[in-house]
Image 1 (cartoon, one colour):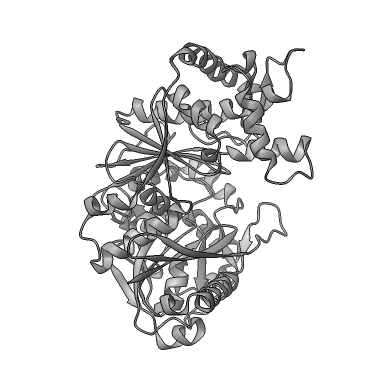
Image 2 (image 1 turned 45 degrees about the horizontal axis):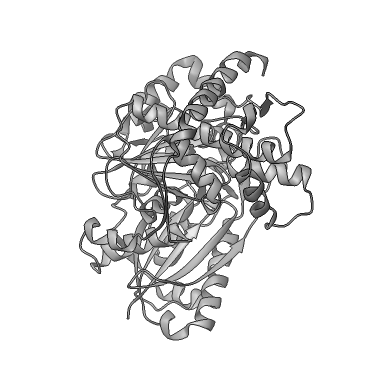
Length: 493
């Protein structure tokens, strides 16, 4: 039996999982780390903590599953996008990693809008600039800390830094490169013009190789530090969300994953890039060859219900969410006219409005706690439908929908999705879709499986929800009001 190691370098923690050759999860170990912020807009992370977390996870797996650990055939890694590390000529870190959450490059974005670079970068990369991307932060560093920047010899994205620590090699992949604002997403290569436009040296970034390519092997030094056998192949990997999408079964054009996690994501796999000139959805390269990743993002999805719990049921544990699902199921579709706009931290798709905020509309004396809970669930799904509307406007056919994330554990939330979208909804079995996605990439890279068609057998559907015909009219009417509410009050924000 062969085993595969999945490393998921997330924003708040690293998860290390062991999987057998049949795609069965053996074990997962997690390690949390912090975001450091001492200045307004700052969001930094100690990359040493990433490595420490990986070492700890590997030690725990080896202790509990030594025989399996010694039979690891390959490793794949996914990680948080945009976050990057600055290295000097000795490949030592010059500062803490700048995460995608860092907002200090907002003045750079404003300047680009004034001088025309904003539009030029969109034309070159198929991405509209925001503070999350890597390039604006590089420009900020050049201006604010020129002495440090002069020492920079390489800039590595988060997961690529861990790959370097494991293999001694510096390589990135198309999905992660898409988040730099220096990558030509349509033609799948670094954009020479973008580097020239921003006066950034191209050679400080690594080469781009396919996600399934073996980019290196575990070195003797890494073996000593981690306990992994020297020579284990490491597959290039991809961005965390896209690898999770692979693990949810996004293999073909038209297939969609709806993630109701802290944030909400509508993701679709496409056979060709789709540049949205209205700047609503994101188009990035996908880890599977010949595919692109189309994304609509809701800023606060399940986080909206967590806010409700923290505000009105402070001190309750995770079990309260089961109670929320129960009481919400007892309320009729439409929450008796109550509508919730889930813009607690602004909204991304389709508005990209950082000033937007949450709203309960239509509260009356007959509304109880259960109505407020169900209205949150419905409002989040309305926001996700708003993303889907953009996809369909751009000619992206939606043929199948899988739901995942914390919200997918609630039957009532799944049923709301099916009725609001007016499409059947499937739930996948995998509790760790990122781990399954990494396993599939590693298996493709090492030849354990030959193609994507063969990978489909590792995606197992556990439940299906169908639209309730009696609810369609109610939800369509509520959705029209939901859209009009934002349009009518956006100036008040």
